[in-house]
Amino acid sequence: NAGVTQTPKFRILKIGQSMTLQCTQDMNHNYMYWYRQDPGMGLKLIYYSVGAGITDKGEVPNGYNVSRSTTEDFPLRLELAAPSQTSVYFCASSWTGGHGKPQHFGDGTRLSIL
Amino acid sequence: GENVEQHPSTLSVQEGDSAVIKCTYSDSASNYFPWYKQELGKGPQLIIDIRSNVGEKKDQRIAVTLNKTAKHFSLHITETQPEDSAVYFCAASTASYDKVIFGPGTSLSVIP
Image 1: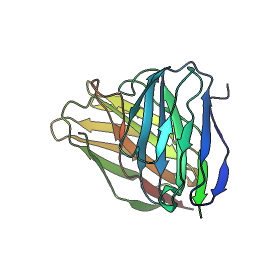
Image 2 (image 1 turned 135 degrees about the vertical axis):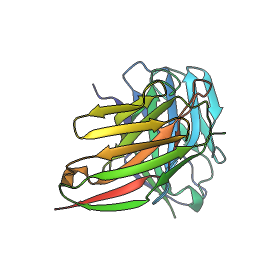
Image 3 (image 1 turned 90 degrees about the vertical axis):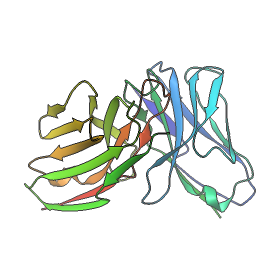
Image 4 (image 1 turned 135 degrees about the horizontal axis):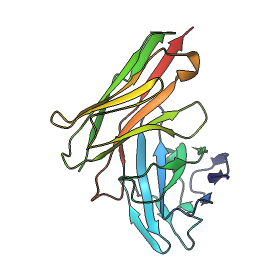
């Protein structure tokens, strides 16, 4: 099994550009999450989804958008990229709402905004 | 909402020694406490978890303890090896949450 796959692995953007970070999972998990991890910091939740067609904001949603049209895919969209969005982005999935089952993480997308 | 604190932020131990990482949580309704290990350049990976109806759980060299009264839980790694060097995250969640709240992480270095 591939698990959670994130693309691209690295990306450099200019200020004001936009891009989509891709995330797909092959475990048929209902729940999917997007986190950002700044250097030396923990994981901050950006958005999450409890199933296809349902999304909700996490702790730091400003500047991002998500959609969930299928169970497998949960893309994260950055509009008008800003230097403050330089970070490592992780996608994760789990069977239930995380309260009883572990989350499975991808290996991240390292994004720099210059 | 839930808040998870984690100490220490960095920890260095000699190979073969034990390492202990401690976390506290704020929401007394939290009932699931996973621990994740993040190696350089990789995503976090679950290493052990514990639920509120259990006080201790062990898996080979790794053990986790939970004190619900004090709202503390700890990760214990015995006989540390260089490959244990990584960042470790504790986390907490409740049945009413769709989310898991992570601690800020502990960078563990095992010196050969």
